[in-house]
Length: 167
Image 1 (cartoon, rainbow, N blue to C red):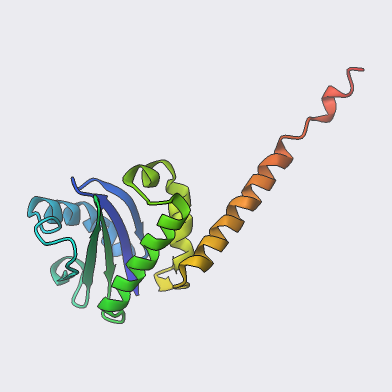
Image 2 (image 1 turned 30 degrees about the vertical axis):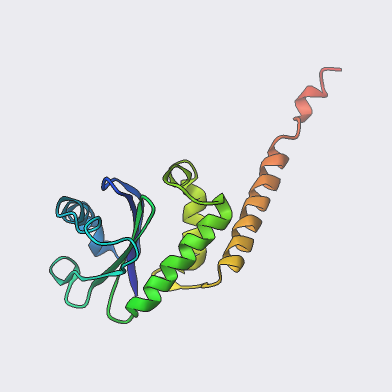
């Protein structure tokens, strides 16, 4: 089971955090401090995958996988029922989907469109379980969600009947 997903910039500021296990919320800030103060995230080359055992923080079978994309670090916290390489592949799907939605995603895209990023993540992972691994299917689903939201907002923009009563 996936316990959490965290996106943070290269300065250690979290940009997105989604937790599927309530135990890791209390360790979230401690985890950010550990990873940033010890320079774990920035000390390795960009093309190297990073697998970390985090037993001391999250329990006996907890693992953390992180990958750096430009100035963003994506962290997945999960238990032993998940495969590290599958989580790395899921990170790639997440980044590819955000690239398709935002055309070359940047940190500001995540900051100013956090609801869309959460929708993308919810289409990929729900309740700690992987739902979809095809980025094109996720993009279709997210576009459909926003199409329905725009339609709902346009219904709200219809003039009220009270403006007709004045004639």
